[in-house]
Length: 216
Length: 216
Image 1 (cartoon, chains in turn yellow, purple):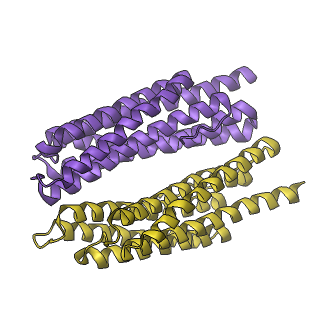
Image 2 (image 1 turned 180 degrees about the vertical axis):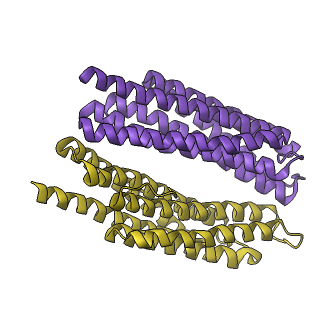
Image 3 (image 1 turned 90 degrees about the vertical axis):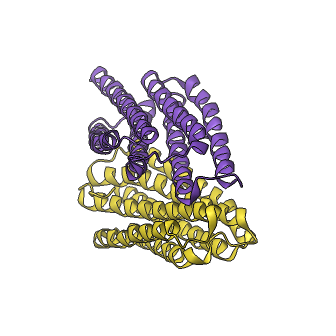
């Protein structure tokens, strides 16, 4: 029974890693829609989010069923409780990718991001996507070292967010109010995606070490 | 033992309701700071957030300890699992109140919200605060009917958000780029506070009925 049980726990983390990889795809596609103004790509992101929501329900049901049938303790309990937390973070990340796609769709066939903000938003998108991809590996491999390292990448995101505000609020901003609002919200969405990636990784630290990371 | 156990579960929900009331205060104070430009009030919100974070840690520890010592099932298990979810929502709501307070602090002694956006932002703040207050009661009384009713209030928030964008992006907007960005982000923060309140209330539906609400 114990062997089967540990297979279940590994299966749960494997499923979370897969969902994290789906979120990575959603972020990548949402960014592609944003930077090209392609509404069909934006629509794909928006409609695919239902799959992430369905996966969330599946993981929650599995976790609840393991909790009530197996009454896990110690490290096993930490896996289940963390899985519940991680799945709700992943579901939010999917929603944030949808928010990015919706801004893209709102401005299509134009591109929401004006030239002055393009490089910074591109880099934010790259960093967010990379962090989500790394979080998927961290969950799959229970990699504590990589989880801790992910925080450094989040610092780049914070710097990018500040640069973005400096651009928007500078005297030479020619993008107007609408583009400024779009860029400010986009920055917020990518920043939150990155925060959630850090938090997902932090839960892996908790699973492995029992220590609550200081960066949940 | 079972009596003591149910006291523990009631205590956990009572503590969540109290934290929810603390979040309500944080939203109220953050809004006061925002609408008056009073930086000392903003500072109070920012420093008080550590208490909400500490409460989050306490609730998580209690929930984990109950899970491993009592191995609850069925309705009792739903209380614990929901408490874990609700405490992470409440912690985020506290962070969002801090974000509002930080925008207030950034513009002090001026008021971040220009006259053109004042009425809409005031109403968003009122709705958010009221929803958080109602969520506290819903948690304390396990009030499913009120939880379902809370969704209607959230629809007002969605309408306010749309009105706010119409104001910002209209030809007669005289607030400039900086105020537009502030107002767009403030709208986002209040909207998210409201979303989390709905989600906290939704978990009460799950605790009582075992049915996942469609609005988590």
